[in-house]
Image (cartoon, rainbow, N blue to C red; front, side, top):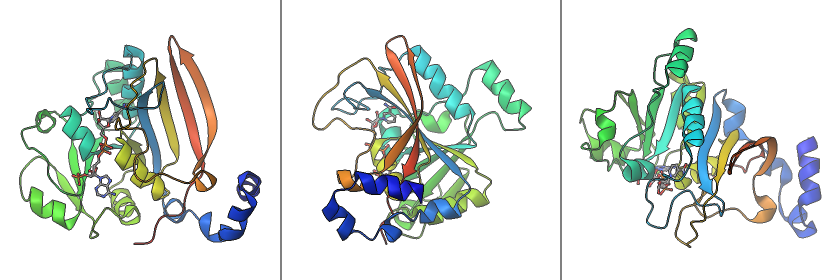
Length: 261
Ligand SMILES: NC(=O)c1ccc[n+]([C@@H]2O[C@H](COP(=O)([O-])OP(=O)(O)OC[C@H]3O[C@@H](n4cnc5c(N)ncnc54)[C@H](OP(=O)(O)O)[C@@H]3O)[C@@H](O)[C@H]2O)c1
């Protein structure tokens, strides 16, 4: 309730009248989920996660790479969009002996599960990702499952019976498989879809000292975007400058209500 009051102060009068706040502030997926989700992304100082040709983001420092690896090491599974895999061809394995030891001490397998979200199933089995020593699952739709077929490469296929992934169903499936801490490694279209579904708890954003610009360069949140009055709201947990980068940690205070299918 305090969140609603806080939010009401931020809304313009006409918006207050036009929305059913009781309905808007419900967090259906989050209320039913016990899984905790954290987006981890690096972006340029002008808010881009890649350049205009969507090259792999190689601009973060070694410090940010270590930060990313530590975040991955803290998870049961990480989720990455097919667009990100198309850009990189690989995912990030944990190689730090300390982090591997830490996982062992917590009775976790050496690597978290790397879950690829692809509605189309149009993934290239020749990508190096499929040779990496990582547990791999595919989160897909019936169309995607039939496109990928019975090829090897994924230990499990989670097929959500909707045209695009319904996150309530997907999260239930992941929880049934024991996933409690899920890292979201991008890109912007995946994050937008999850945010729209009210499925993001925290964001860890690294602001890097580079300007990429460009209308078509992707940002942390793609999709159609939110109107400012109805946009998700964040609370700053921490802000840590290291050399020329800033490590931001936010909690999502208010999520939008998921769109009805
Ligand atoms: N700076 C960073 O930290 C960072 C991190 C990651 C990525 N990136 C950059 O981000 C770019 C890629 O981002 P992106 O936005 O283009 O792609 P993306 O978010 O990685 O992937 C989008 C794809 O994921 C699948 N998908 C997402 N939500 C879905 C849903 N609800 N239902 C079904 N399928 C869904 C679809 O796959 P299908 O097309 O197969 O249906 C969709 O095309 C690359 O340029 C990469 O370099 C940067």
